[in-house]
Image (cartoon, rainbow, N blue to C red; front, top):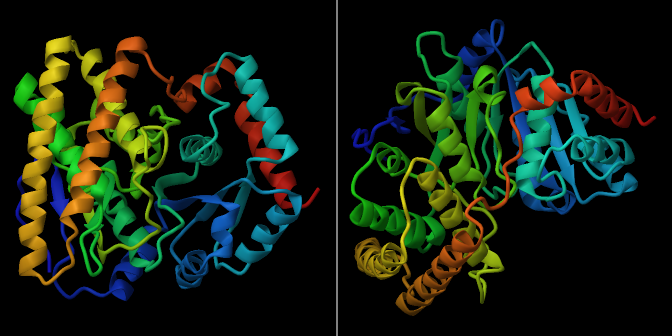
Length: 404
């Protein structure tokens, strides 16, 4: 059972006590009479052919408090889109599937590009989440929005419940909730967080000193998790990164768009299992690509606050990161030994070497182009430029789901 110690600048809500999911859902059902809750599912078609997605749908069939479910479907042809619609039709709440590769949505994306909106051509989870947000934000009745990945092998319906509960309860004042959990089987997982993200933040603090942004980013127990929830009024003004920096850029956008006292994180399950990414031989694939783009995102955000990155600072950051990562290896070696878990020290050392190379590549890319890949614009900006876009977007999704 996790602890309830509050050691960061945001509220942490651990999973303790004996409250059942049935009791929590009963309260959420009552709250749904006043505050409509939506679940967004960014998915590849290939994920609908996995046991994980079957488990997710089986669990969601028991959920009664949701107002809508929106599926953002990538890499699907017309026949596959039809299969997904049929697969989701037995859920007890309305389900809208956004066919991102369909002709109607492609035409709308082209219109956005022609209107000057950037990064629309960069396919991936970031664009998928952004499109789902734009679709549901056009519904004035939607209040709270939760997002989670679709590759969770041990999924339970407790995930959306614990994501949504803190932001819809009228006795609280939270606008954003980030999910966290342990990543443990017969060994510890979460290499990108354990061996890169946390040592990287500690290194930045050692080089540049303490600041509020780093304190905030370091307060999240699993900053790279794909599970979060926020209220509609916050979501409408947030930019979304189209790169692997999606999670950290979203946390940064939340930091600049609301007060820290309105941000929390919740333990949504005790242990989380999903498909594991390969490290990657270079900074262009696998977890190495992820860490490179995370580093670039944080460099960019810090530079926007006036932090200057000199060559000497970058060199010091590389050596400091390697030292902090080595220290993390020693810590997780002890944790694994005490708990009887497998631990491959050689593989961990190879990982931090790959992450160091990725950090070096991030530094070179940032020096070459400090602006980087533009974020997808907040939907308030889209509406100001294309006032009728939301209506046409809704209509396109309706016609696709009607089979017209």
